[in-house]
Amino acid sequence: MATFSAVTRQHILQAITEYDARGAENLLGVYGFAPSTRDVFVHEGRTYDAKAVLGVAHRYATGRAATTDELSGGKVDTSSLLRKRGFEVPARAVVAQPRKRAVRKTDVPEPPPAICPTCSMTLPGTGICDDCG
Image 1: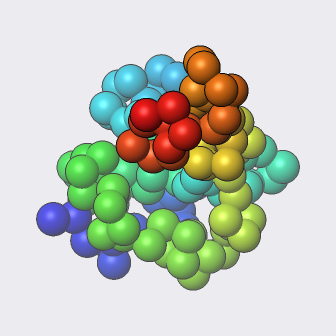
Image 2: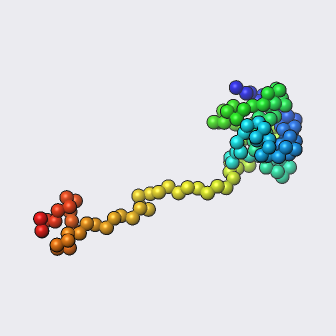
Image 3: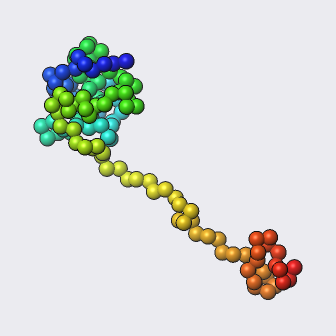
């Protein structure tokens, strides 16, 4: 398990420099990170993937990059760690993605009631007409 007590602001700045030099997609691929839509932070007007930058910063601090598994699932609070090191973390920054709307029972139209073919009355739940039998 990676600990981030050794990661300083300078290590994060070095990781940002590598992020800028390689490009986001290349850096993510090299270190095995998936693009994050929730964990981002801002430095000098640019937005960065917090987990990837912290993973690389861990490499600068300890010689071993933190893995995506060590940073996922709430094991590390990336936002508070970055704030403590003096970086701007937007309040729950989420890249806009279309939300899937849940299908409700009210969204599905009710089928028309069953009608008796002889007398045209609505059939009861048994499906047998009370008048015609």
